[in-house]
Amino acid sequence: MAAFVGLFLLSGHAFAKVEINSADQAALESVRGLGPSKAKAILLERKKNGPFKDSTDLHTRVKGIGEKTVERLMQNGLTINNKTVAGPVKDKSTTKTKETSSKRTADKEKEAAQKEKSEKASSEKTAKQSRKAKEDTKEGGQNNQKGREAS
Figure 1 (cartoon, rainbow, N blue to C red):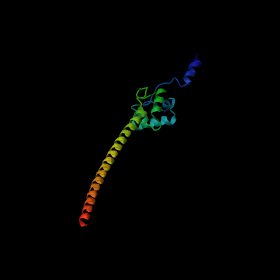
Figure 2 (figure 1 turned 30 degrees about the horizontal axis):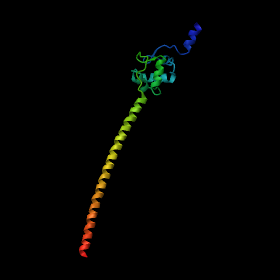
Figure 3 (figure 1 turned 180 degrees about the vertical axis):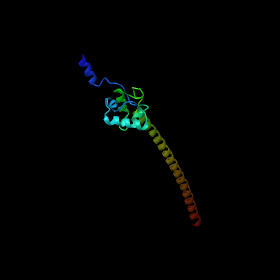
Figure 4 (figure 1 turned 45 degrees about the horizontal axis):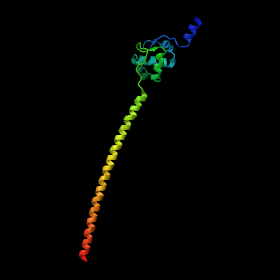
């Protein structure tokens, strides 16, 4: 039985909670997934700018630690202000979809405005050509009449 418990402990499934704002280098390194360099970066950032507020604050301030890494570290025992679960992660696919959708809408509106402008210009050009054709027809008729009068 003791061998089973020892094996369970070594497998990484059991871990002590490590509070990021009070842990030293050794305690941070005891969290699975945190090596010496990241532990040191966390300590330096904490010393320079104060305690971490939440998971977003951690991944924003420490280079090389992203949202998913913070989630994994918290699952492995890291706590931030005694919270063991990372805050809500922004769904990038939804955000990207919304950005893409609004960009498409803006592009369509721009396209519609350009089309309307083009149609208006075309309409004005057609009207101008029509007036010119009428004037030419009038002048042609007047020239014919003058030609008959001269004969």
